[in-house]
Image (cartoon, rainbow, N blue to C red; front, side):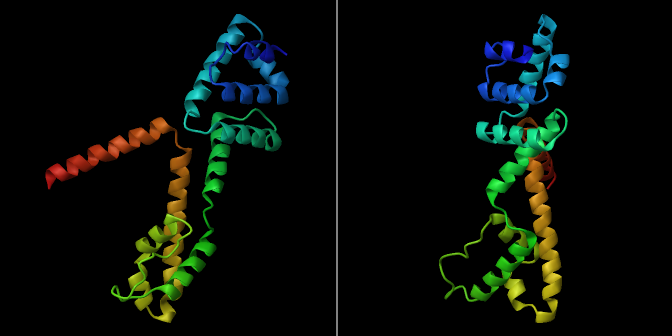
Amino acid sequence: MPCESFIGGMIVVSNQCVSKCFLLLCQNWSEYAEKTWPDTDEGRKSARAYLEMVTMCFADIPDEVLEMATLHCISTLTFWPKIAELRAATTDILINQLGLPTSGEAWAEVRRALKAYNPNPQTRPRTPFPWSSPLVEQALDAAGGMAAFAMSDVIQIPVWQAHFTKAYEDLVRKTRANVQALPQVREAMRLAVGEETKKLESRS
């Protein structure tokens, strides 16, 4: 097929993984590929520009994750995936690899940590509680912290659970958004936050 002719010669893009994924998509949606990137000089030029853009958008994604995401799109979508859809698929895979607990599992973990908690710093075990993810501890801190939770009344537990769940789900959403964002966007946001921090410090 036309796509194979210029992919095979590796003249479109140097990233072999992107080329391989592109070929898989071409094979699955051959009619769309042949119409969009015909075997002509213009077709090759267009394909080269497309693959250069894909390479830039997935520069931070491991090759095996991009391949898995491509196969996932092929098996679940009925049309050639947009870059945003492919990026979302890679995000799902990366988030799954983090092994984040559900909000219910995270709250159960907090309850187990409460049973093991010792409010006395002098007799408290040196080994910290083995949280399954830093996000669980961060969410608990955002909700008020273990010390305050340990001193709360039993009837306040549902309120604590609600605050913790909201904090945890917000952290998971932020983590997902950070993973899905392009590296260039993450860097721009980091620089913007740094500049804003400098301005606030200069005013104080």
